[in-house]
Image 1 (cartoon, helix red, strand yellow):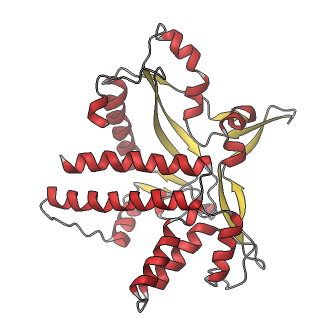
Image 2 (cartoon, helix red, strand yellow):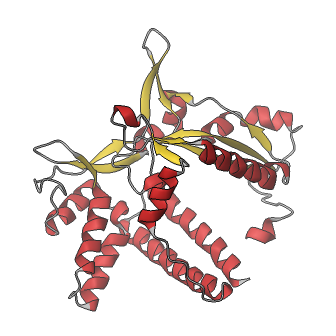
Length: 309
């Protein structure tokens, strides 16, 4: 159907945007790719409305959050000690729901497609993540309140400020479009470019109104020392893929040298988010389910490729 095709197109375009950012492509190219992605998502939303008979479901977010907490699906971690933002515990119904989701995912992907499942360690030595680029590039741009030291994610400050600006109304259409263009590529700017834009918009620290520092890169990985000597630098893994990649040779041997094959892993990931918010959408510890497909570079074939291409 149309919605399914558009959903696949959105996935491909989102992957393309992510790769462009990782490769450091020019901001203009990234902005164009982001605009195309936004357009595809609008088309997908319209197609889904059509498929569902134009039925709209309004969610009372406040009531939903209160119910989830009261029924103990999810609760703030270490609440009696003041808690830490971005960390949550699953209660009995939340744990059961997660177990069902994981089992459904495993049946749908791992068992149905005969994938090779692994369970790799969360602790990762620095050379692994240095090779993958995470040590140098797994960053978000951060700013600090010059007086209090409070930290903020710079691109989110810009996005929220533009939302507030447009919500007030009275902005001419052409000017509103220009603001939205800036907002769409907020996470594609260099530190100097983003710093200048924050100054142009007059953005200050949300809580105190104080001035902000220049944006600077903040690595999102949790660092640690492995072993009693303290000489081996390591990190809590920010994603599960690296364990699959470094075991490629053993997986290939296990599969009797046959390619293509897929490897999967379900496990914890850790990201030291600058400003966790939006409930469970941006947290510091979370379960990931990830798949890596390995193919011959010159023979990218799969029996079901046409279903997703």
